[in-house]
Image (cartoon, rainbow, N blue to C red; front, side, top):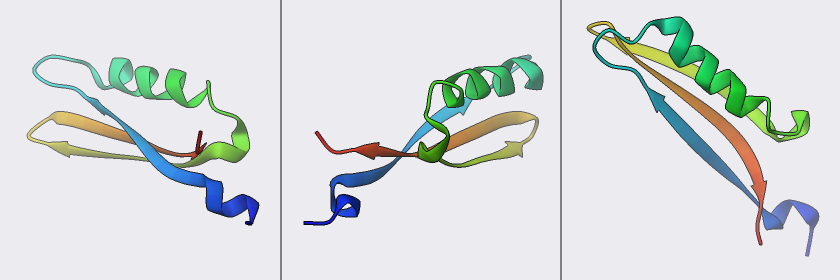
Length: 64
């Protein structure tokens, strides 16, 4: 069995709504991303719908 087969892509979603400032939303996502080993971070993406932000942190997690 290869080392790759015991790893899974995971994600964590951060959602802002109402008057939540973007810097608070992005800070929360960055703080989570900083807990990951650099080689586990896959991507960070964001979107906005009518001013409500969403940030997704994609990462690799080893299967237990």
